[in-house]
Length: 109
Length: 124
Image (cartoon, rainbow over all chains, first blue to last red; front, side, top):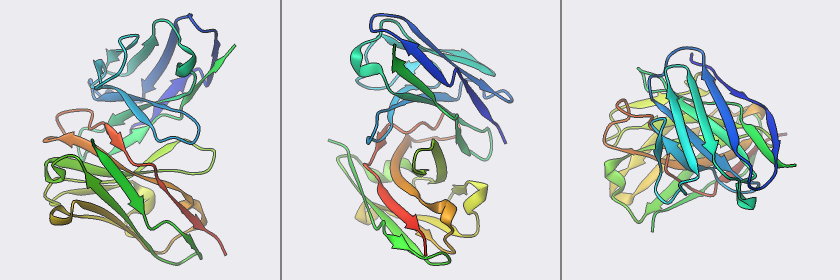
């Protein structure tokens, strides 16, 4: 089973700052990694798929990078609405089982 | 507009059964993988199961294998999750989510659309 470890657990930043969130896989997942944003009381929202592709309607300040075991979600300049919990997600090669990381909480400093 | 609407959540006793439904609209349901994902109160996301477009492939997280069954009815644009032998640790909000168009094994199989969830509480 592939385990995803996200860091840091909590990130405290101010609006306008750059946020860098990390996701590390216990073994290679190639580029098969997604990122989601979840706000309290809401369903998750897909931000990035296949490591670096922005989903439909996602602002350009969100970007994803990485391959193999190390991945990064970058928010170039934080907007007030970006403070939320972020999850990474991978799909194992075969069978296509899905796992999520434990989440990173991005909070206002 | 893509919509996914879950129903069927309830309070159920340990050992009991429940069937969740998800009604899809706004897209060609039969073209997409579909998944169930759950979230226990105050916890993170846990993928539960997914199903291929024609229902020929189904996969489950180990903790629900043999107890839960995912199915779909493409004629009714509906996804289901039959949950048997429920345990306290199955208590969660259950989300229906749309997976990729076409191939799951050739992408991250990420889920671009989600319902608002239905709450399942397992307690005596």
